[in-house]
Length: 124
Image 1: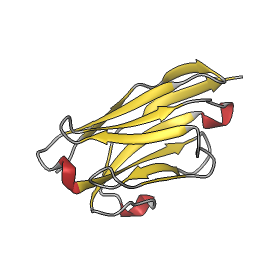
Image 2: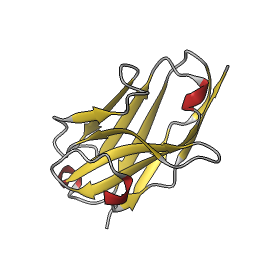
Image 3: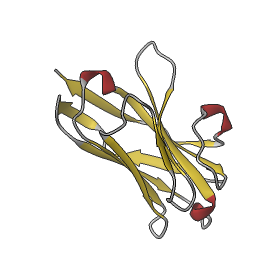
């Protein structure tokens, strides 16, 4: 069982930056691939970024490529999402997710564990 707790969301102006963190419980964090997803009001949850268990492989949605960076610190059981040059369309609830895998996983249905989400609001 893995428990995930996100933090770092908030209100920011367009062009600003935020760093989200997701702290995971358990001793086997380094066995889990991690992902970030977001959900805007009235829309489906969408993939944002993913990283494999070792941190050596990452993938991004086209909409955030070049602006967001996913990373992880396996010694701290934490995954991060650095978000720069934020746009109003980045607004939503951001969720981190975990699945026991060595691959990079971009599909939400493949993830077994989810955090409660953290709100990110970007004003224009």
